[in-house]
Length: 167
Image 1 (tube, rainbow, N blue to C red):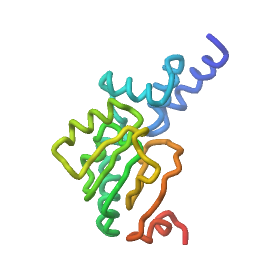
Image 2 (tube, one colour; image 1 turned 180 degrees about the vertical axis):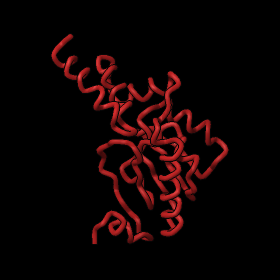
Image 3 (spheres, rainbow, N blue to C red; image 1 turned 60 degrees about the vertical axis):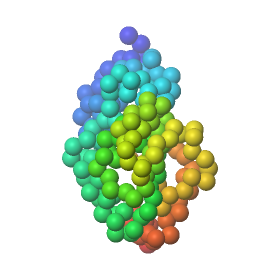
Image 4 (cartoon, rainbow, N blue to C red; image 1 turned 120 degrees about the horizontal axis):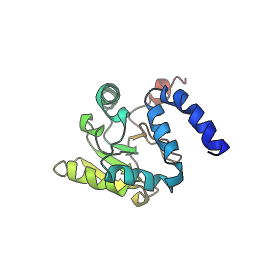
């Protein structure tokens, strides 16, 4: 066992105790030798029957959906773009007039296109199909850690900064 492997093994109990993301981190560390890219990781995860993770299901998903559905309704948000849409479990609970889901995994995009094939208010794109001027009233990244320059254009809102605690 290498020194790094030993340190990671010792950190495992601490990581496992972190709500929501802990088990994912342990899983990711266990597979570090197999890691090629984020796209590859998520695509393999979905192709082998995995899902978007606990944040997209049950009480966590319901909490986010309740908050966002109220927000979209209150501020008359007409369009939503989500970066990291995953397997579509979270968006099943959403009530958005128009939704674009963007994901790094081709398999996730394929799954969502099938799942929502009868819903013309939703579309799904791979991350590299998004053009720089893709705009929406509300831009989301729920449970996804990404670093993109995302244009924000929310003329009907005006409350986003207040929501975040700014004045």
